[in-house]
Each structure stands twice: as structure tokens, then as C-alpha cells.
Amino acid sequence: MTATYATVTELVRFLNIEGTVPSRSSTGAARPDETIGTGDSSTTKFYTDQAYVISNTYSFRYSVSEGVAGTALVETTDYTLNKADGTLTLTGTGVNDVGTDNIYSEYSYCTISLTDAMLQEALDRAQVEIDNYTNTHFSTATDSTADYTQETNEKHPGKGKYDRDYYLNHYPLPNVLTTVSGTAVAIADTTVYVADTSGFPTSGYFLIESDKIQYTGKSSTSFTGCTSVGAAHSTAKNITPYVLEISTTASGSEPAWTVLSEDSEFDMDKNTGKVHVFRDDFVLDVFSTSNPPRLVPNRFRATYIYGHDTIPADIKRLCLMIAAKDLMHTIVKNKHLYGSDGFNPSMIDVDEDWIKQTLSAYASIQSANI
Image 1 (spheres, rainbow, N blue to C red):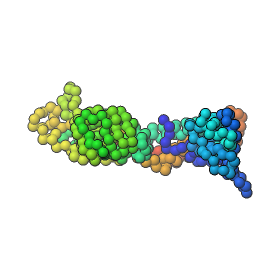
Image 2 (cartoon, rainbow, N blue to C red):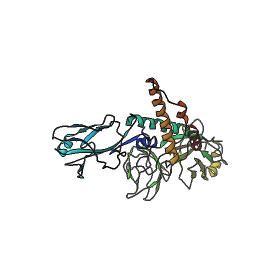
Image 3 (cartoon, rainbow, N blue to C red):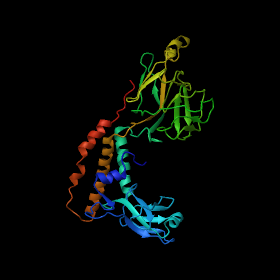
């Protein structure tokens, strides 16, 4: 998992350990780009002056002189960069493009010899710690594929005739929604065309009216590999990444599940994970059988994604603080191993109170289904 709450660039700036090329410390003089070499139509390897380059901060271009705008080199097509040691390797295409021009660069680097990979790993660990403590996840519902956690067929016992409220084990549920678009859905269709699949997992389940449909892939405007399309659905019908089902099958038998339609058969509060079932026919059919008692739902299950549909500013800052604390442990241990002193280990916990308060504020405590 790659952290999404904060970036490596944000981390080095948070810790104030970012160096830049051109240098910001130059005063009273021009700040030219760094010249990392001159092409000769054959040389492939060039080196930046600084190692520990930070991802998403660098750019390379070639031109006859520094004052000329030149042409940007395209990563992968024209070159690869080893960020840890600052090695630029031109591809065959890059060698031909550069010719005998100069190669110029702009980039940021870590001033205390931490590689981009080490910084990213600290952010990854911080995000896992946040998710584990809060029992939820933070993402952006407008992302093409948000990294929400998906629960499949989470089961709960039935609640009886008068108490139809259920509480999902995880909450909140993100506000992810799309609609059938362009082409209506026919029975047994394997592709469902929609307005947008942003926020939906790359595979899983979705609800359309009273159909629970499984899919194995998606594009920006369609779900593919669909199965269990049991009915036709017209355009503009809502599609959601959660499905709620109830069963009235007698104990001892394989349960048969009935998919519920939102608004007409269930209502849900996404912030708390509370679901209220209000199908009347299960009460009216009581006279036709006595097992299960009164033919009310004796099983309930839910398939859904959960997490916040935004990444709040304090969650970003929390991720940066936890990652910074992690790195400070590494740095202090390294200095002690080399016999350096003058460190105050207690400073590692300088943000501890703030970290605990923010974690507690977002903790999602499971509600008992009683």
C-alpha cells in the first residue's frame, strides 16, 4: 500500500529538510538550472549534483544553452532516474532527442540523506497506524479508484418484527454514487455503462434497484465482467457500492437472500452505518407460515465499502507527524551508533499529545447490534 494521506514532498517540507535546485539560498545573483551534462549522441548516463532526489519534484530538459527554453525530457520514454543516487539514464529515444545539446535539471532533494523510498515507507507505516487505530479509512470519492476497504456479505442476526435497525460494523460509508448512462441494462448483460465509476473499487459489487451485481473490472464509464444481472434497468437509475440483503429462510436450511431497494425498502445513515429496514410484506406474510416466527428477517447481511470521502487537513498533518516521529527514531539511533551526542530523545514525543487527540477524534467504535 502506498500512502495517500500525505506525499513525500509534503513530508520533507514539513520537516524542513528540503534542498532545491536551483538553490533558494543564492542571493543577489541569478539562479540557473543545474547543467548535468552535454549529449554526444551516445552517452546514456548523467548525474545530478545532489543525490536523495524527491519524487514528483524533478524535471529535465535539453537545449543549446541555459537561457533557451528547450524541450522537456519525458520520463520512461526518454529517461529513467535513480532517485537515491541521482543517476539519469537516457533511453535510445532520449539519446537521439538530446543529440549534442546540454541537459538541464530542476529538482528537490532531502538534505539529511534519507532516500525517497525511506520517506515513502515512513508515510506508509503512518497511514496503516492511523487506519488501524481509527478503524476507518480516508480517501477522496472523486479519485478514479479510491482505496476504500470493502466488506463482503457481513452478516448480522435478524432483529424481529418491531426492531428493524441494524448497525454496520464499519462507518462512515463514502458518498459514492453513479447512474446508468447511455445504454440501458438488459438481463444477463456483462457490461453496465454508467456516467462515472470514480470512487468504486476495481472489482466488487454494486446495487441497482433490487439487483446485486458482481463485476470484475471497470473503465471510467463502465463496469465489466458483470454477473447476476437479473432484471432490465433503464438509464438514469442509481448505482451504489453497497448492497443490503435479508433472509427469512427457516433455521437449518441454506438461506435464500432478498436484495433490498434503497428508499423503498431500506434507509441508511452513511455517517453512522445505521440501516433501517421497512419492508411491510414480511409482516403481512406472517399468516402464511410460522417458521421463522412471524416471518420477519432472521438474517441480515451487507456488502459495502467504508471510509471517509475526504482527507481532512488534520489527518494529513497527523500522517506527517507520525511519519516524522518514525524517522526521528531512525535518525537518533543512527547517530548514537556512530557515537554522536547532543540529542534529546524526549523531543521525539513532542507531538504525542496532538497525535493522540486527533486519533481519538476520528476513532470509529463499533456499535453492538442490540
